Image 1 (tube, helix red, strand yellow):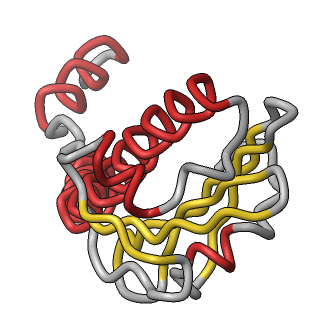
Image 2 (cartoon, one colour):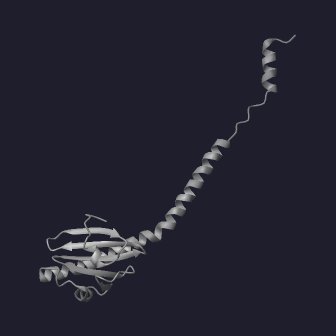
Image 3 (spheres, helix red, strand yellow):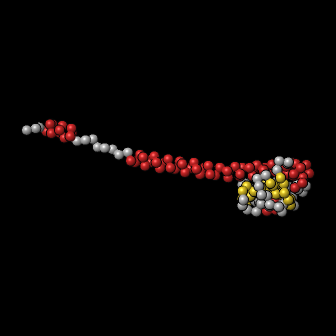
Length: 159
């Protein structure tokens, strides 16, 4: 007859170690990999939009610098119309306030009573506005109408 120790040793030798599944590890790893690929594709797909926005804002800053120079010289934005701005900044194309901007390097400019405004089309249906006042205030805006006249209504403190 076998004693208890022999029985236990025999049972331990006969039993196989439990097989551990690593399925959970691969599910989590696969999900993380898919999420990374989706985020990477989204970043690449939206990169041109970010570049267009930055270019439009840069164009408006160029126009702002030219308008500010004319304001400092004359004491008012009254003389900062299309011809004067185009002469002060030759890197961009300037259009009258009733003509819409159709590209990143086209600026529609309008002057009003004690104020100056410009707009640039970042992409079809998306325009950035900039409005300066003789009192030194700067206002921003966005919209779909890309005319300088529309930019005269800009009232936001930032883009």
